[in-house]
Length: 369
Image (cartoon, rainbow, N blue to C red; front, side, top):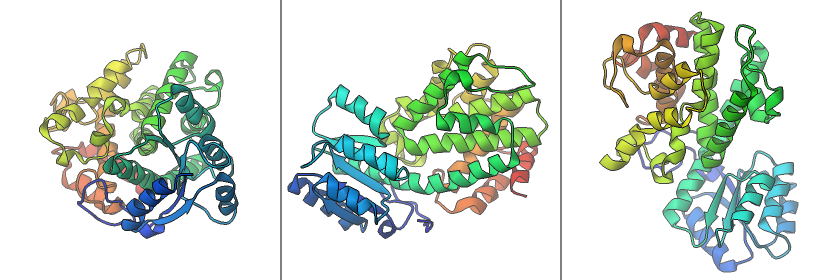
């Protein structure tokens, strides 16, 4: 799945070759399976159709799937039970639950037991279904890249990188330490951060992975820039939570490039930094973090959003986040076409001094030297 292609197409076209994506569909309803086959095979996805859970588990023993879609009711077990077993035996397979209703208890059980990626209600809208699946496809790519990032962080034995690992493995909040100049942050802060990250993961798995990468790269840039450990910690927290305001956006907005949004949706998208800042007011005494979250899309020339501030009015941490966020957006085709790491660096260099702080960009580029 490393064959990433350049494209300026809409979000319903994946950034990888569809034939390399293995999808398993499990549903007792033959008509539903036939519809899924039509949708996926027409788009060239490698699709397998099965009616019962036992056969699906047997096939899993010999075949690795990137995505599994399971109906809540199967011939021999519940879809939640099947997804739960996939979670234990094939944790990298992204799990989608197809449900004919909106039963809250069933939804809660699916999230708690099966670690699902999405819940899709029947009858589904084909465009919405494909948007969810494409999001899952792209998550498989970012997951592998993220594993490399985490491995690098572990090898470097960075003190603050332990926070990323701890939050990712969801250890108990009262055992997690956010270290900065040998001081401890109240456990309530850690619990709040963990909770918001969990919300992001449930809302959009790709967004969760993106937030972790931004946190990591922003932290490394701040360290290279020689910022104090307090400031480095704040940059890390802001990087992890910078997109929490997107929790309130529709899936349509989240799966559409900003350049393709209509005027109303673009205004809603451009409010997400402020929504995130306002929603995190519970993190008292972390005003620097909230300021960075609110300003991570600001540009030196004042052309950014949501405030349109410029120059010295943009803090060092915000300048770092703006660079890392733009790197991600250029690399994964959010701002233009998808052409990878070197294209992203070239675009940052091209727009330094106009959008991005040249000094902080220099520190960021040292990560890759």
